[in-house]
Amino acid sequence: MTETEGDWFGEDAATFGDRLAGAREASGLTQKTLASRLGVKASVIEGWENDLKEPRANRLQMLSGMLGVSLSWLLTGEGEGPDAPEEGAEISSDLLDLLAEMRLLRSQIAQSGKKLGQLEKRLRTAIKEQQ
Image (cartoon, rainbow, N blue to C red; front, side, top):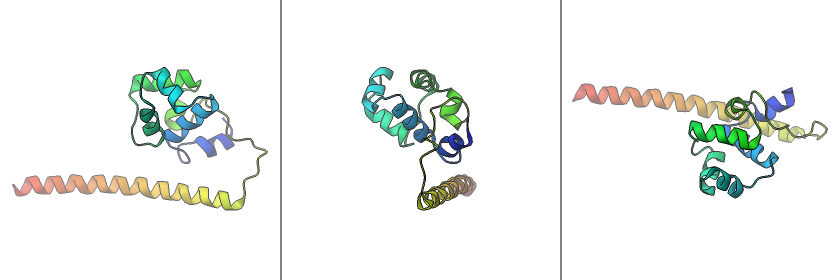
């Protein structure tokens, strides 16, 4: 995997849904076609690509085979996956700034999610102690 691929599909830059959508598009499949081949509804594929739902292990294995990517690439961006956009394609500094801002926001959201989970656990413990 090249550095460019890591930038586009790596764990810090892309979600599982981003990688799934990229692999599906690189394979020339629509959501509907992929759903039909997997035996699920198109709305399930849409949910996976929008990171609203996560597939079970057996579906992950099927996806990697159908899309010609490694399971580890789908999960983390490391391993065999589709090529990133062509290196010759110039990306404006405005787009690079947007990408950097999105990465920062994604990191902040992940940290906030962890903090929220910790607070919820403390709240449940406090409620149990008061009962």
